[in-house]
Image 1: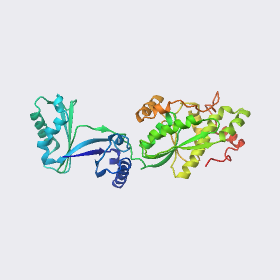
Image 2: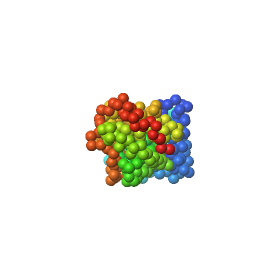
Image 3: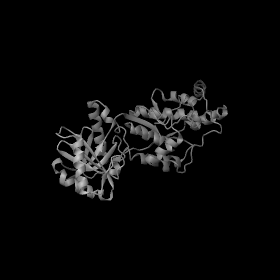
Amino acid sequence: MKKQWLVRYSELFLKSDPVRRQWENALIANIREVMPGIHVRNERGRIWLDGDVKSDLLKKIFGIVSFSEVEHIRLNEIEPFLPDFCRRHGIEEAKTFALRIKRVGTHDFSSNDKAVEYGNLIRNRFPHIRVNLAHPDKEIHIEIRAHEAYLYDNVTKSVAGLPLGVEGTLVALISGGIDSPVAAWMMMKRGCRILPVFVALDTFLDETTIARAERVVGILAQYQPGIKLTVIHDSYLASAKQELIQRHFEKYTCIFCKRRMYRVATAFALRNGAKGIVTGESLGQVASQTLDNLLVLTDAASGVPIYRPLIGFDKEDTIRIAREIGTFTESIAPASGCRAVPAGPSTKAKRETIREIEVKLEASSFPLPV
């Protein structure tokens, strides 16, 4: 008997053979990145791991839908082995059980044949127990592949999604609050590596906000090893704010701020080969996220796509995911917040108006930070 780990994936099945193989290799590389030294073997629909496997790390690898620790034997060894396996895995404490058989390959028997044979073997050894396929106290799984058998009694769910990196790279605007880390995580789950960026508005933010964002990104590193926050200091808003006040346009401060962030993130994306920007914006959540204002913000990205995975979420939806991925506690930690927000921010800015004001403030010629 040999102990191994069985790793399952799902969406990769939907791809053509060349893409599936490429994505399988990406998933295997991601597993090896967090657990170097383990031995990996793959078959269609399955990946097998040997060595120092850490289940807590497997739970956070995108592309894995579930996994199980299995005991591997030859199929002809199963009759003496199965009762001992059941005993070691607590079947004597159960009143009902179900036997789940999966079979791959060509055999002279069906899965149902083996379910009946092995089910009778278990009942003969443990006469107190009865079969309940719908709601059993104990499930025993046997996966038969050619002349090999893999036995397990637990299936642990993982994050699923696509293997990290198969869709390329995105820049994520990270504030450190609840929304932006969740948005970044959701795009990671869809196969994107993330370059997190914090645009530090000089004079309006302090180190407490930056520190919170760094801690949040540290938590995201559990899902994308090596990820680090890039802090870009920018003095544009400090110059523009006074002009906006003098011209009685202070209500547009948040629009100007966000458009500037988009421009900074766009420049960073182009320098680093990223394919777009991801933000934590959700429709109608705050003043700058109304449909009118999002329209005004979008054209500041100069043709780089903007991805808003939370756009239709209620706040509770986002909070639930933040709790699940571990960022929520840090995201609500005390921080100073932005001191540039006006008392009455505009909720229905017009692109023509904003562009006209930006021309007067020479926004397009204000140097972008490097």
